[in-house]
Length: 271
Image (cartoon, rainbow, N blue to C red; front, side):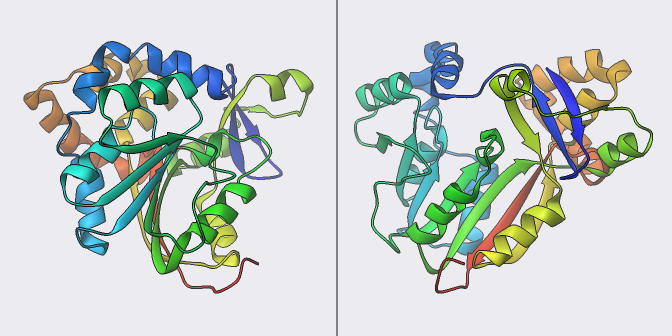
C-alpha cells in the first residue's frame, strides 16, 4: 500500500487495492472461520461505552458498513434495536444464516432501505474513506435516516499531528490523479477540520472528537518501529490488550490513525 499526499485537499490517499464489495467479501471470507464466534460477541468496550453515553437501551441504531456484524451483535445484546447493512453480499448471506435474529441486510450506504427519521443513532466505523468519489451521498443518507436530534458516531483515518509533521518534512509522494490510481484506490486519511466543516454544513453539530489507534498510527508511519509494534498490535490476550490500551493513551493525541466524531442532527433540511 502506497500513501500519497493530496495537497489540494490536505489528505493522504492510499493506493494499492480497490475497496469494493468484492474486495470486502474476500477480506471477510478470510475471517469466515471466526464468523460464528464474532457473532456471539456480547461486549465491545468502545462501541457500547460511547453509545450508552448518548442513547438509552431500546434506541434504534444502524451500523452502516457492518462487516462481520459483531458490533450489531454487541448492540443487540445490550438491549438496543440494532440494524446493520453492508454491500459484501456473500458475507451478509453467512451472517443471516448463522445469526438470523440480527437485523442485518445487504445494501448500499449511499441508498439506505429505511424511511426518513428512522434511527436514533448511526454508527459508521471506517466506511466513508473508501469512496473515491466522495462521501456526500453517504452523509446525505445518514442525515435523512437519522431522527432530529439523533446521533452520528463516525470514525475515519485522519491527518494526525505525526502525519502533518511528515507532510512538512516532505516524506510522502505528491498525489497525481490517474486512472491507475483511481482503479487501485483504497482509502483517504482526512483533515479533521475539513471533515467537521463538511458535516456541519450538512446539518450536523459536533459534540465530541476522540483520537485513537495510536499504535497503528505510529507503526504505519515510523517504519523502524513497525516490527515490534506490529507484533504487539496483533497479539490477542489480556496482558497485551492492557499494554495496548495504556500505550494508546500515550500515543493517540500525536500518532492516532483514527478519530471518532460524535455528531448530532441539528438541521432540518439537507443543505
